[in-house]
Length: 94
Image 1 (tube, helix red, strand yellow):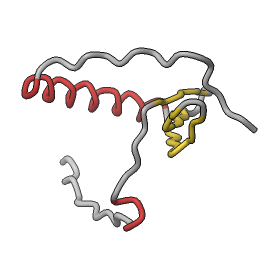
Image 2 (tube, one colour):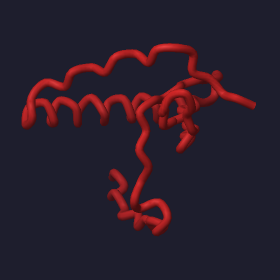
Image 3 (cartoon, one colour):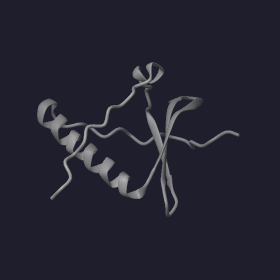
Image 4 (cartoon, one colour):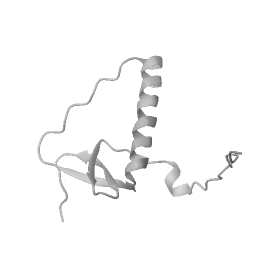
């Protein structure tokens, strides 16, 4: 007999509810995890606004969910034009 899915209640902290805007993402990975750094670039500076670290298997689920949502978006609003690659070098300034 298969286990019934259980409901998981999430706490959504007030300081996260507004979200943050990102216009750039850098991805790195190791064997065990992917790291996605989201940043807001306003030349000549940029700021990292969030970092997500997750497993390779979960990255596949994220990609699938994004592809599904892009397909639904384009069916409703039309084709999304891909943004141009940023010009210049983007990297961390330590």
